[in-house]
Amino acid sequence: MLGLGRSASQAEIVAFASGTSPAGAAGAAAYANQIVPGVTAFANANQNNPAANPLNGLKPLQFFPPFLNLPNAVEPGKVKDNNVSFTARLAYDVSNRINVYASFATGYKGASVNLSRDSRPPTSAQPAITGAGIAVVNQTYGSRFAGPEKAKVFEGGLKGSWPNGAINIAVFKQIIRGFQSNIFTGTGFFLSNAGKQSTFGIEFEGTWKPVRELTLGLALTHLDPKYNSFRNSAFGDVTGTRPADIPGLTMSLSAQYEHEMGNGDRVILRGDYRYEKDVQVIEGLPNFVTTNANGTRNLQVGLDAAKPFRREIKELNGSLTYAMQNGIELTLWGRNITNDRYINTIFDSPAQLGSVSAYVNQPRTWGGSVRYRF
Image (cartoon, rainbow, N blue to C red):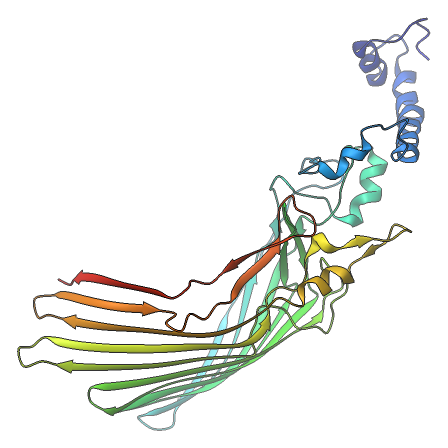
């Protein structure tokens, strides 16, 4: 096309494509209308052809996919957020010991952009990126942007206080529009927004002193969360399902006995027990998602791979403290005394397709500490 009678140099190709060569504007037009579409079509048709792409077999060994810069011609990489949040509350003293209240509050979380090394354009932008000719070699897609989320919380409750105890009871409903989901994919994060996520909850907290030296405590939380609408999660449409890592019931029991010695020193014995009902740890594992023969992704495999990983917490802690009048405190403590073992979280193992990594809780631990209060 350049009519040189030989292979063109890089500088001559650049000059031709930019329109600064003797071919002038015709070169730029030919580059845009013939060369780029032709090269792109050839690359797409031969990406799995060993003769044209002998290194294609090494693609699975590529730890990080090629990075398409942000911003670019298709993705502006800019967000503009604004919001006004407020809280309204009505309270009434039934007596000098009991108060009832009702409140309504709004909340806001700004948009998020993933700028990590494994930041992938959204799948919805693929046609525009390909059409603009800016896709990098072996371009991969995911989601690196999540719009803002807005929350509304309706709450009503009762608070009571007496000489030997107190109670707090709350009933609430939280509704989040555009809930931001952030799933680790093994090398980066997949950001997305749920259309609507809601949670109904009941909380109780109470303390009681049956005798002056003993204080008992109880806290209960019941949560019923739901994805009311979430069509574009990392695992497809999960509308109507329960979000992971939110136990339906959480309970905390505590007891503290404090005895004053004749010399003014104090002995403090404390124990607490925490229970969380069995719950799925994570919603899905992206690296288990497979691609069918027709090119569509089987997202259900990623959801199914996460189902066996569940957690139930039954953890007991205790301590014995000798507190002196001069401010020195000597404490012996034990954490997770029953050695309850469970998984805190799991995630796709980096660079190990089909493998899972996890963080587990702290095992049974004994220790001592010395404090000085002044």
